[in-house]
Image (cartoon, rainbow, N blue to C red; front, side, top):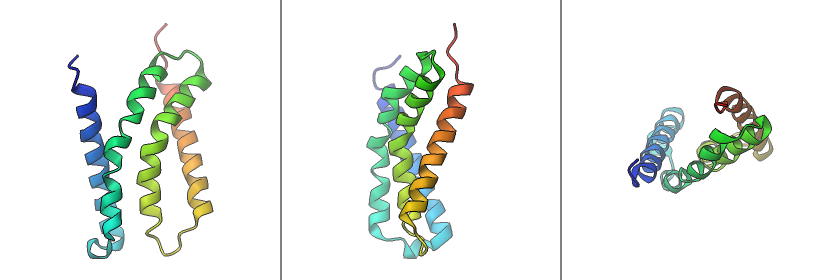
Length: 122
């Protein structure tokens, strides 16, 4: 495997997720009304996508279901936080408690589902 494959994949994935977040935010609130900080925050997704590169390989070999789910949760925690909170805070009805609880529920559900689907081979 090429040594630059994983960082390049993280870079491309971060750019794609950031672009999608800008498109979703623009369609919901209007591109002209998106603040500059919103665009700049999306750049944080590029280095944040390096985090899953450390946890996902560990999740791929973890035989214990809860450990595998925890690795998936830790891998997606940072990129999803940037994605979710940057879009949530634009809402005029933004509630930090509701946004945080929604974030925790989605991360927990997604990691448990991924851990069930992505069982390592014996």
